[in-house]
Length: 223
Image 1 (cartoon, one colour):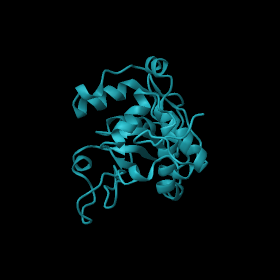
Image 2 (cartoon, one colour):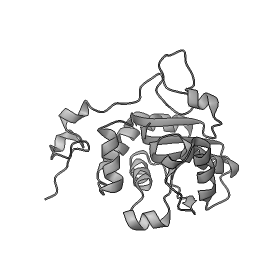
Image 3 (cartoon, rainbow, N blue to C red):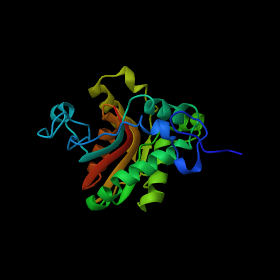
Image 4 (spheres, rainbow, N blue to C red):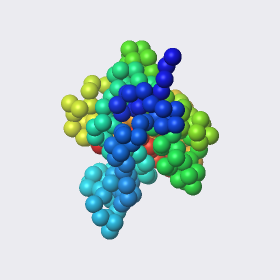
């Protein structure tokens, strides 16, 4: 009654196509090597180690593993998850993240997944937290536990209206930790989109302040 649909074009697909039709598969633009050692952004040359942003900004996270470039039709697909309730798309992206980076997460000694929270007002309106759904799916595929330890106590204004420094300060005030003891932990922040990195950076700073040894992130897209 509810056949699987392609995550990009939303057409009904064959069971053997696993979440995406053969035609749309070619539209997936993966972030390839060389990548920035910190944020995972795709670089132009292999002799580069860091992207301009990571050279210029203080980063509190230790590495990034974004899956895809934030361009259409993937950006439209991610928007459909958030604003059109296409929660079923999350499974596909989680599967690709686990397949591409699961072994790396194990080698890094990641002990838990930390989804970026949304404020209770948005959760009530939307009905779900897309980062939480993504973390749950990755957990089921990798065996890593989901640690629901971050809380958004302030319903922040839209980040697109702010500069980079303002975004970071805005989020640092908005996020808080439910538990104070993360001593020696190796954690992986999970979010749907990495744009300027302000959200992940603010979360990583809080986790590091609580004693986390290493903090990484993964996301469906990297702008």
